[in-house]
Amino acid sequence: MILNVGGRTDIVQYYSDWLFHRFKAGFVLSRNPLFPKKITRYELAPQKIDCVLFCSKNYEPALDRIHEISDSYNTYFHYTITAYGKDIEPGVPSIDQSIDTLLRLEKIVGKNRIAWRYDPVLLTKKYTIQQHEITFAHMAARLSGHIDRCIFSFVEMYRKLQFNMPELELLTEEAMEELAEIFGRIAKKNHIHLQTCASNADYSKYGIFPSGCVTLEMLGKANNVEFKDLKHRGMRRGCHCMTSHDIGAYDSCPNACKYCYANQNPEIAKENFKKHDSHSPLLLGNVELDDKITQGNQATYLKNEPLQMPLFVL
Image (cartoon, rainbow, N blue to C red):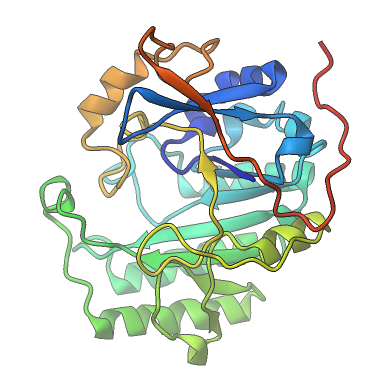
């Protein structure tokens, strides 16, 4: 199975101590977001995990210890660095701080295991097409030669965005086409493999590859392992990713990004953050008497059974 560390919340930035505790304990519990009394247990022995998939906007809190996982598990790291400032991403470091941290991460895990995520791409009076061109060019120049690929997607107009981001401007087909041409041209100049995420649009004429942001081919190449030839079912409309199992929780990320799909609003996330216990098997709170715990399906996607040694020795 693929263990997802960052789809529902930024575990690396805010819950990294908990994450390392869980790997040391050898298991983790994940509460079902739709049926809160149902909990799934996942074993974290290397033989049970095909790949640990990270996604974060700030790897700084985990840099000193990330090797404890990356040295013993297949891993892949999505690093989201966008064009936006504190007005949209209050809890996220600056662009150049983030790039500096990515370069440090590269020295630990290698560039083949890092994808730069430039998403979601959105427009406001401040963040115009021209501003995206300037910022993307600056970032691409600094990251050239230090990443496996760049992944971008255009913002989806979730209903709550109408309230959280009234300043959003409509992304027309013409605007997306213009942005795709800009990104493709800049990526080509900087020798960066560029692909879309959660999109069925065809931008191949700009040198942009249609793909899922989590494919077995990508993970296998990055870790020098071979996966089975399996269908990638995707997680939502337009998604071409391989199924992964998330251990996070919605409404728990203090970053307070205005466009976030995983938080209803920042105040709920702040309150939920107070429920965190770094020694609990759950990200938020603890197991209750009427909770039902079941073992998760951890069938391997690898062609050959993994032979990694256990990470932590108690």
